[in-house]
Image 1 (cartoon, rainbow, N blue to C red):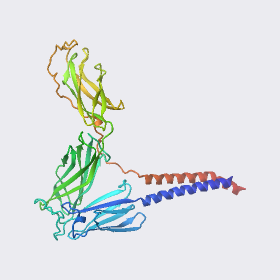
Image 2: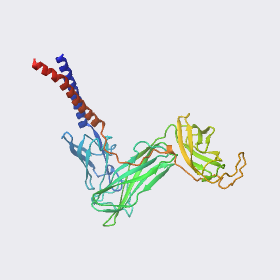
Image 3: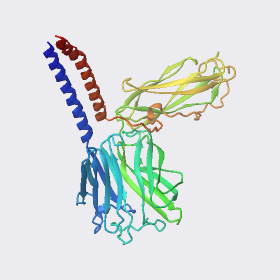
Image 4: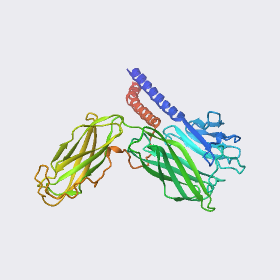
Length: 450
């Protein structure tokens, strides 16, 4: 019996050690891809410039202490450098004839790069030898190509970072680094999303700011995705303009490597506004209501809506109607303010149902009740004041279902699956050692006493 327990404990211990070893191995050998784009200050890919002879090299060491080195040269079909590395610290260097050599240091691990992919954009200023842009572009007379250092767009991030849909609000975050060797002023960040607004673009500009040498800044700009947007990928273009604070020379840099992916849901109705015919009403008065809605989904829908207010004794339901994909409509309703009701503000709730009742959109609006009964006695005749009865918007609300944007919060570091596996393995090993000590050691002691 003792031998059997010893064998069981030994097997469990070996299994825990194997799990721990696997976790450490996975932790050490996780692979990441570093992609490097190299451009001049006119936005030209230096890999495509004849005679430049671009060479991109990577050196450094991984977490196991092993040195790594690789060199990349452009080909006819490959215009960006790709390096596959493990966790570690690396230096990327770009060299080309007619340009000042540029380097960047990169730390690779799961916490800063959970997706396993890092994109680096190196901007190479001319060394004064006069290598021209490959597309023969002529720079604007007010824009001067920097001759020292590097003022770069470090990163572009879309929040939320997953797919977005019609009506969603997003925030595009641009990080700018000033390594140009001088203080910059009148820095302005411009972000444009191409072709997203019925073939037109959306564009936002930041306020001007100063950025000292060896400093960086994160700029956040907000956009609302148009309701009538089509599914697809849309290019995000970022341009940063600045002046040399000492000389007054003007520069700019551009980046169009990011895309925004828009995807529509199969079924989605959004109420874009609820409008009452008057800001306030007396007891007994009729009030008109208009509900604007749009079909943002990929299917035609059969729709109906309800208007409810327990305090105002309202419980009305519309007839069903069809709302085609991409179409919008305005639906009207009429209700009476009860005769015997106190003055005050009252909520009116509107619920739209579609997709055989599986989908709903919900909104509310406030009606202010004032004064006394106006003498309305029912039927089609209204004997009170007619002022304000015509439909004119006084209250507009954004659809609750129209957006998923949440205020941007910088997340704390999160553990990767590999790190979680490592911790689980360690816990398992401790548990096994405890069980082995609890079950086996007493038997050994008994054996020694005999």
